[in-house]
Image (cartoon, rainbow, N blue to C red; front, side, top):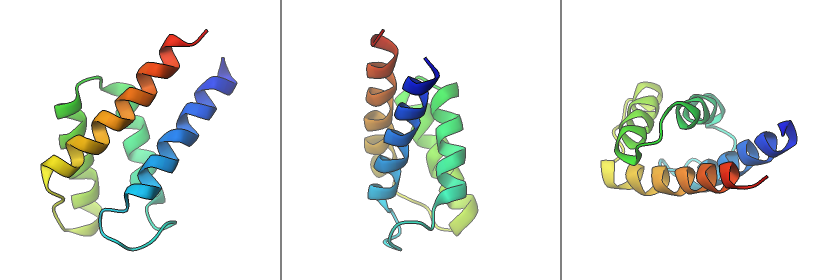
Length: 88
């Protein structure tokens, strides 16, 4: 069970590192990724998650990511979460 959760969290990290909304290349988003993963575990609604992601990154970088981009990544992350909860 724990192993599956870790694997899922690593998938979240991969998606978020690849996303790179400010084009600063990987490795510079660790605090934001940690906050986002926490949000993924708390929220199931893509719009709510997108808004949370937007505010997490805005707080750190003082730049706003267009909500459509946040929604796209939120849906991708929630799909991973959903797939994980379906496996036994």
